[in-house]
Length: 361
Image (cartoon, rainbow, N blue to C red; front, side):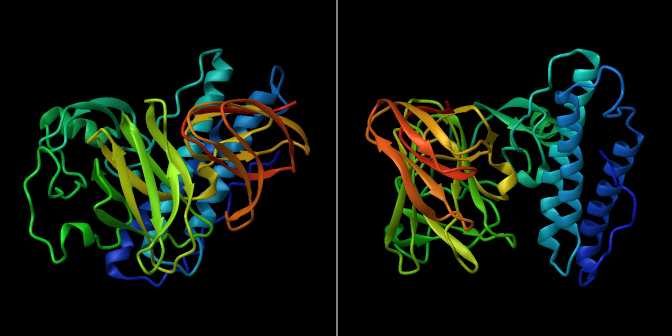
């Protein structure tokens, strides 16, 4: 296994003064991680090396290569924001490798910072309350953890108050409340919702892409995409058993932004919606479990599988094509256990309102 971290990075961006600092920082972080890989003492062929250790090294190398691919090209400043995601994955892989070498438990892979995914992985849980809301535990990066310790209101993206929600003041809008439409944003935040506002998530430069929707409070959340004429499209039940929401949803094809509405059932918790590349999809060979709708990457061979489901309504398992559009429904049914045939490796979407598990037999 060759590390291959040598060589410079070609900077083909159209250089502008406002871009220079972000791009220079991204390049410096990639270079630093490459040096850390080269300096690491582990060798795949050393005595005592295990497959798990070699897998973590391979994951770190893949993350380094992904960061370089995200950086190089005739692209825009916004593309540099993909670099931290890849490097966070690589740093976690090296931390897991170090833990395996030391015989210690593997470190937890924290979610992205609650306030802004561009801050990178969270490092701890902290108490925070939205304006007029109830305090809850959220996962935050180191910088926001310091801000929260110094002040209950750190500098971070905040949802606009929505008329009609408890704890908020009515605001003046250009449209009636039922027709409220937000401007496209690279990350959308909100607090509760009854679907009265149409949010717009700016499409990233990479394709295909996912939406990562998260809410730290327990609750039931439904999300519905809208077409260009504002009509309802597909509905996603993101959770159904009272668990915190962390869901990945395929983003529909769109040029600049995708519109959606949020329906929070019986809650007013803060939530975020962020675009993400395919590397955020969990991979598995033998078994995986989850709650509500999600996207998974099956790495096993074609053959028999088992779907177990505990929840209301119907669960569907859909095979996705290379654009993350539904290619075929593999199996569907109500609560219980059912067998099916895996078509083969690829991305699959689970659409449900409860707890489920998938396995290969």
